[in-house]
Image (cartoon, rainbow, N blue to C red; front, side, top):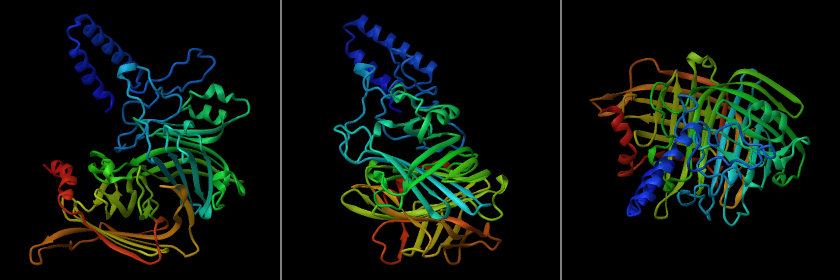
Length: 506
């Protein structure tokens, strides 16, 4: 990635100085030695670890600054890494002089957020841990800079803790690793921890009073915040609340077939800034074991359904909807696991236009079924609150299918959460974990008589799978009435997004 471009650039520059042969030779040798040192250390040449002059005075991470250079697990999809250079002091600004590319002097808005859900079928409850960073490293500093931890808990409860100091937030660019320590315990000198990023889980528990840390297989946190329903909770006002969590994660599926290449959720072109905000499901299904303490009640669990996704970018959707479930009755075994993620919305595209897109994607027994607008079509009918009916058809590729998902919750269910917007972190979406959700999926075949795709004359692939713990959301607005639509992608964009699919079939 960035460091892969460093050698050609440096080599070209040195060649232009070829009249100074010894200088060029010395430069090449220096680069070779640097790359060898980087390879041995597992660290990046672009953002190397700071080595303090007095190692006893400052603690540094025992992990590489950006995580190991390889995938954390085989199902790790694209975009699991962070998409910004943290302003945390462990990330140096100018270590290699001429060849060092420093962080951009951002002026516009930027956010990156991570969403982790644990579903507890035996308790009938769910937890969502939502971590975010806004406007990191702006120069001059942004008034909207914020590191935040939101937790949605039992009975659609809600807590939040935040800190305007974006320099406390660290993140990896090789794997999904991130964290922010709001406060340290009284016996820890915070000045000695300034260069410290990821900590071994046991040390993190011992040293940190409040904050959070996500490693590829471990999620930890201590929230010492406030009832999120209070409008001023972000500023330390309202009823206090506490939540501690320590969760070990075992991935089952990422975003794609278990034996195939993992994919970008919104297609390969979604990586470009014109398609912001970006969306990536990083773990469509997994199993979590551990403990969560919500105020005075502790939940202990083993092999509970786990789900993870993220968003990032500098633009914000005007309106959106979302349904997620991986806790269907009869589909909790590792060999028979089932997960669905469906959603869509209205977003900006170049030349002042907007488009409305959506998708329904299913992972079943390690196989990925994807109904997206570049290989089929998707329809939605979403009430202002209480009912989501989504349908998807894939009519190109090797797996032709149709899927339908219906989720319904009570009007009294749900809680309003905060989300990054152009004006900062404000109330912008409503969620619930109590949607009664049914999912069906049928194989499609081409009918020569009607010249259309129809359901095959055989049993459904999935026949009315049911869960009482579907996750649902609406966001943006306005939501005064039902929103109905059909997701179709026009040429030439449809053809461009389909390119990887064409090569995968050849």
